[in-house]
Image (cartoon, rainbow, N blue to C red; front, side, top):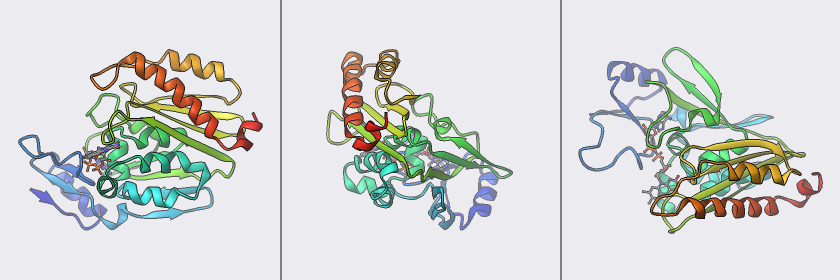
Length: 260
Ligand SMILES: Cc1cc2nc3c(=O)[nH]c(=O)nc-3n(C[C@H](O)[C@H](O)[C@H](O)COP(=O)(O)OP(=O)(O)OC[C@H]3O[C@@H](n4cnc5c(N)ncnc54)[C@H](O)[C@@H]3O)c2cc1C
């Protein structure tokens, strides 16, 4: 069964009537062919989930904004460069057009470390209440398991428009298509740094520190629970994280490095 609500209130009514319904955003993950396909699907293609709103201090995206559109909107904003880079890393471009911000974030995909580094906020809603959470609290802690409570929707992702922030994302893939085996995102405001790591560890990892204290970042990377699999060993991933961090810090605009 395929449920097609026209607005948010209809969506929650349908979800209430069919609690087993699984939301479909771009569908690139949730619509596999075969017996694993959910029996009841809930289409999220409604206007209220596709908006982009600019305020003085925030840029707020509906979760149904495609990864492609996200990259285009953020391309000219240096503070949010890391998120644009992570979005542009999606290949092939057809997937970038189909995949959504919300679908990717909620499965802990490429965008998650970049969104965490820039300090994004997730706005979630059930039929009763709306909540604002740090982005990392909606990223899965177990692969393949969404972290939202039952019948809860991600309704927006809010990105800070901090004029003095700069950010960078660096990732390593073993093949042109497929997830990164290691990814590092950094965001810097003054001398304060937020560093997020994805791909190399089962869960998104984050630290906050001082841009000048490189030794603390290296120690933190060394202590991460990095895992190996057929695509890359743990030792290789660990070594690549150090390299990616080096690359990300080097690529930050000179002004931010001088202020450290
Ligand atoms: C060829 C190919 C290349 C790929 N490359 C990459 C890549 O480079 N990086 C990467 O990270 N991934 C990649 N992927 C994996 C996947 O396509 C993406 O992660 C994609 O962003 C998932 O988004 P979606 O909108 O299609 O999610 P969907 O499949 O629609 O949904 C994913 C999950 O989130 C839930 N969900 C979605 N939106 C909401 C919401 N608003 N509220 C509550 N629940 C929701 C769904 O129910 C589902 O469980 C690739 C896939 C393919 C086929």
